Each structure stands twice: as C-alpha cells, then as structure tokens.
Length: 451
Picture (cartoon, one colour):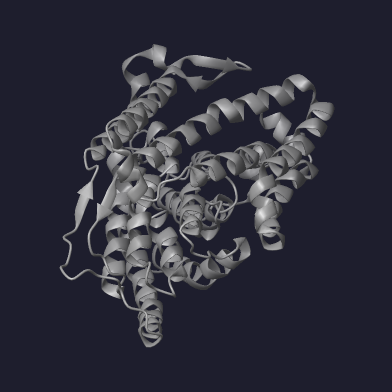
C-alpha cells in the first residue's frame, strides 16, 4: 500500500474533488434533478476513478482496493448508521415542547451529553425530530439545526470511544477506554463558547419571531413530556455493546481476528461480522416491537439514510487515492507539533473519512518517537494524542460530509420543511463560528502557551 501511495499521481484524486463539487453545487443548480439523479453522479465519479486506476495499476489491484474499502469500511459504517437510524426512529418524544431559547439550549446540551455514550449518530437521530417539532412554529430555526450539528453530531462525541469512530479506532490500537476523558476540558470550553454564541443568535431570532406574530400551538391543558417506544433504548444499548464487543473479541479468541482476506490482510473480521449481525437484529426487533403509529408520529421515513448510503459509497470509493497518498506520504509533511496535528487531522477529517485520517496521524505520531511514556500500550505524548483526537472529532463539523450524522440531520430537517444551508452555505456558518472556537482551543491546549 505504501509503495502504491508513493507512486500514485494526485490526478487520481480528481474524481473525489468532482464528487464533493457535485454534492456542493448540483443542489444549487437543480435540487429536484439532483435528488433524482445523484445515484448516477456517484456511479460516474466512481468509474472515472476506477477505470483509469485499473488501467494504470491492473484490474486486480483496483478490485482489491475497491473490495477493501467496501468490505473493510463502508459496510460496517452503513450498518451502524442504519441500525441507529432505525432504532432511534422508533423512539418518539411527545408533549408540549415550545422552541424557546431555554428549551432549545436544553435539548442541545442533553444531546451533547448523550453523544459520547450512544454515539453522535444515535444522539442526533434521537433528538433531531423533537428539536424540529419544538420549533415547528418558528420562522427562524436554521441556526438551531446548524448548532445541533456542531454540538450533538460532532463535538459531544469526544468523551468515549463509543462517541465517534476515530476514538474507537484508537481504543482498538491500545489507547485505554477511559483515556478519552482527557478531552473533557476542551469539550467544556467549546460547549461554553458555542452555547454563548448560540444563545446570542437564538435570542435575537426568537424576539423577531415573536414580533412577527409567531406563537407556539399549545393545547388548553399542557401535555406532559413522555417517551413512546422507550423500550428501544435497550436496542440502542445492544448496538453500543456490539461496537465495543467488536473491538475486544479478538483479545479473548484469536479466531475473531480472522475473516475475509484480501491481499493477505483481513478486511472484514469475524468480530465485525458479529457486530453487524447484532446491530441488524436490534434494528429488526425494534421494528417488530414498536407500533407503526409511533413512527408516523415521528415523521419517520427512509430518505435520510438512503441519501447517506448513496452519497457516501461514492465518497468512500473516490477517496481511495487520497487515503493511499496520505498513508504513504503523511510522515513527509513535516508535522511534529501539537497544533499542527490538531489542524491537519481536523482539516483533512472535514473532507475525508475521519477514521483513516486519525489513523494516519496516529501512526505519524508514533513514528516521531517523541516519548517513552506509555498511554496504555501507545507511546505518544499525551497532548499530541489529545490534539489528534480533538481534531478528528471536532472538525468533522466543518462540512456536511465531515461526519455522517451531519448529512442525516440535514436530510431529516429538509424532509420536515426546513430549508437548510447549501454545502458552501453551511461552511460559511462553520468558518464564522467554529474556526474561531478552534483557534481558542489551539491557544489554550495545543500551542504550549497556556497548558
């Protein structure tokens, strides 16, 4: 893989750029056409990479890397999202929730707290629909959806390996499970800053909505908040347990480290197969044990997961050359400072899958041999590992494709009539509000000036 990455031309990355531009630009030109034809765009850009790659390096090599990315990354990725999407869609939070600044802030903080324990996808899919219903009477609510993506779909997932896949990858590579608690001070600063920004924006928007005559539609008697389909939290527990189990089974029985082998490497282990079976079984049982009316009340539909499944298979395929090049040449970038690790891991995680990006800089940090002190079984300076972890998790919020829940929240919001920002429009939000916060992180935690 390294020799291939060393010789691979950057021209092979053009289809990946084309894929990103299609996602960003096509909906602006003709949203209806894009929704109907996006599958063809995925096929086109995938073939524009695979055919020249097969001609240049041989059909066998092309097939091996395609199979590796599909079996080793995409299938387990989409099965996990599918399972959490299905189960959370069967949990309906009912009652009189009026989308006031206080209520919206509480929902955001609850979601941020949950994200590290049920995953950013689980927390996002569990709370985005209540957030939308609470704000159904509001004219100005896009900012709430954007900050939901910032906090719940990304930043909140940093405290445990369950919260976000990059941290789980670190766990499977020897980082102790509880080490992720070291991200708590950075999380706290980010939540305080973003909450203050949100409340300033939300307060102004709320006053304008009231001035325009917008009022919540509440009944004569206030309906208490209740949860229908609460038994599905058990199935969310099954899914979280399956993820943890897949990372530890190989420690108890070597057989689980074996599986589907391509070019001498296991790309789909038996442990991962067990994980996927448990997740799919949890999703099936969730549907069998929950009434259809609960899903109807939740405005449940398959549109969001369908969009993510279609677009991300194109992203995964076309990003193969970018990951190969990064894996082979990452150590040549001259990155050896904590702040550099934070920003490079983060910026690349904004556009590439943040799990392999995390691994590249994880291995780069190991190769520096900058410490003999172990974190578990890993010889990486603690602040450097913190910088890599925070960069991979936090900066997934910079774009819609930085983390899969981002796109799912966008899709669910649009299904419910909320006109979300375009790809570049969303980046304008992240540049205005996230980048300044990340600069504060850099000064406080990764520059060596304060801590």
